[in-house]
Length: 134
Length: 69
Image 1 (cartoon, rainbow over the protein chains, first blue to last red):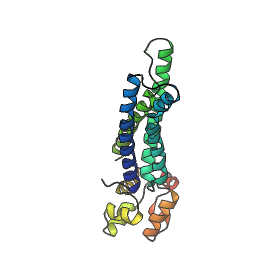
Image 2 (image 1 turned 90 degrees about the vertical axis):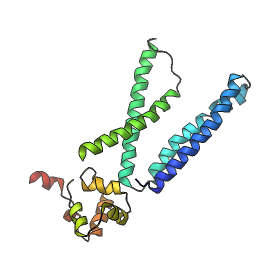
Image 3 (image 1 turned 90 degrees about the horizontal axis):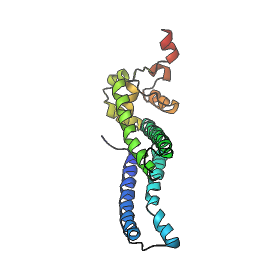
Image 4 (image 1 turned 180 degrees about the vertical axis):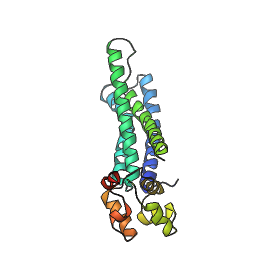
């Protein structure tokens, strides 16, 4: 299947951000494990891995702006809706269970991970709808 | 929304890819519209109709008329 120019740009940006994320995360973890940073530097290093992850959301936003094929845009919108619904629902359930001491504490950056997994579920939903309607 | 896209395309001997290129959309889009899985926006519906030199209602079947028949 051929990609649209917007899909190619999307893929390229996601790959670049993933490389940047890995390149930032490993040294930052190394610094924090050895307690080498403190004060404002620690905060700056602490948020550094979050920047490329935030970039993923910007890339998705750019895709919506740049994709001229309305059907493909609709498919991505459906993926995002599924991902958001799934991540928010799981976060809500987990939050209550955690509040009542029934599950361990989960770091907040777990929810974007669930959201990205939800994009995969959204792609599956797209395929199932496509097949059932065919 | 039912439509005559497949028939109109076949009359001209165009593949879905040919039509997609003429409309500047993906083949997936043409397939989804043709099989009624996706209703195109008004601008795209106009582009499709104009490509075949027809009015929109000659390409797409109005859902209200469809349910009445």
